[in-house]
Length: 192
Length: 211
Image (tube, rainbow over all chains, first blue to last red; front, side, top):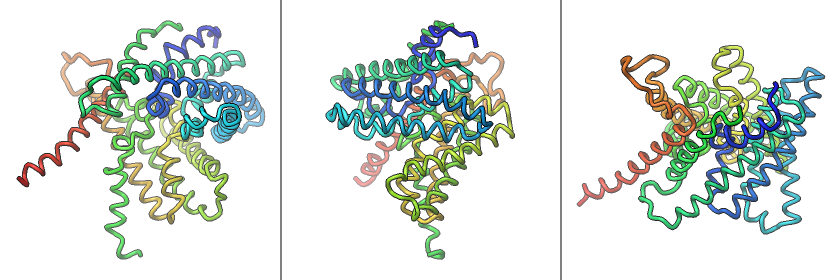
């Protein structure tokens, strides 16, 4: 693995955007992207969980490899992520109860966000070192936030326009996501 | 209970396959749905793997429903699911390495498939093992059908093949975008459009016949 940290960051942010190119974290992407002022905090919260999960997963992986317990990897990762989400939830509840209510059910659902587990699994599979893992998780989180914010802005615009009845709801969101994804393909090759 | 419930059992099964289809109606478990459906064979394998995990974990969750404290139930479910996923992961690796590489991290990501946790929480935790497993099997079959519907369309349009067999002559120009990420969004969107069109048409037709 000779990728530089910058390459990994750009790659995770744009060329291999978690949501639009790798299909990770689609549930919150389709669920919370209705309004801009919930989309952004949701992205930041997810990024934070990703960072914590990535750090813990890195340490844990060293431990598991040392004891030859690789088959426990999946179970221990998921437990770590669940605890990280719990932490974020408690912090948010204390410092910003309004935001806590706005995010509602989607906050605990970060646990089952595939993007978070995806970060942990991919960094293990690609054998990233510590710095690479951290940049990968931050880049991935930033990419997730970017996709969420873009989608929310487009959808806010769309509420004012006249859409055929048939396409309302999920079908419309999916078509939008397809177009966004199409434009993100223009970044292919950017990260090398 | 065991004699009279055949139609009910069938209903329970069909609920997941059709009326509450996880892919087309509930729009759950989107990540594997879109990511692995570049070919029909990938779609089927992913569907079957999910089906297995779904049935086993719902059965176990249901068996343990009396001993599971309410406060830690989600953690218990997740650990149960992760156990079965680990088993499936190693099984696929042993059966076909090519398939394992094609599906990649998405086998392990079955853990965070919302369908499974949703079923465990909403159904298995409140019902006896047998109905819970039947319901889970219905959902799993429904999910597999959904994946297959996407996989078939994307493989035919994007590569001109079905299950690896070429369908068209050499002059066929594949519509490459369909096997790339945007294609996944477009094909699923198109299926949803088709279903909502169909759902809207039916009552209209019945109304027309009554008049």
